[in-house]
Length: 258
Image 1 (tube, rainbow, N blue to C red):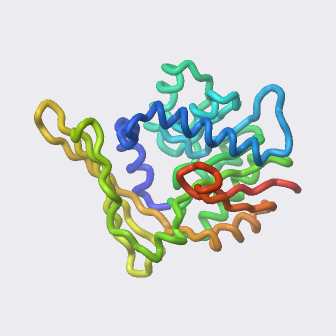
Image 2: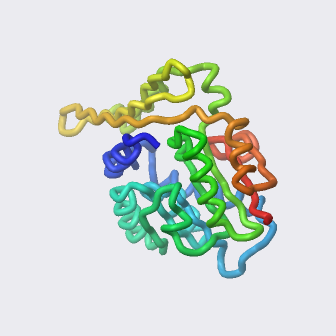
């Protein structure tokens, strides 16, 4: 994992909600969509609530939304600034979530217990740039899934993006033109990785403030991730596109059956 990842999320934690037109509405929408999707994949119902580990919880977007739908949520992240923000947000919204610091690659050591669902949403897994790191993370996720439980990952549709190799995202303009969010992508020559330059522009008291953070991603293809999930021990690996799930990114689910 590139060293820029921790700096990226630590620096972005205070402003992360500004990526969304309405962050609290996004919490509600993602919670509903993911809750419905998860229950469609589980083969059992837990009367006391389904246990879920969000192992890249950030400031709590998915964790809070799913807790509001009855999941017993634990949230972990490698960014201490994000975790501190998530704790404050969950408390202010009256949501009970256990939070802690943990890297994808050390979940087995750093996170106690096992869960009905292990989740990593919003393109966090492609921060792992090598097959070795990816396998290590997936194997650690496997260790946290109960027998019969599922892993759920959401990532960008890189099978399309590697063909297009976009240089930037379309700017999103909020608050009557006073807040603008966009990304510039610098693709590596081998086209397997790219650096994201994330820009947030705000007009505050008549002055325009620009904030820039950067990090690196792997353009992770479905045919690359699927065999790694299988090697880690998962079965029933399924990809679901947004047109079917209603979520904004492709979702891969995998089951622990052994």
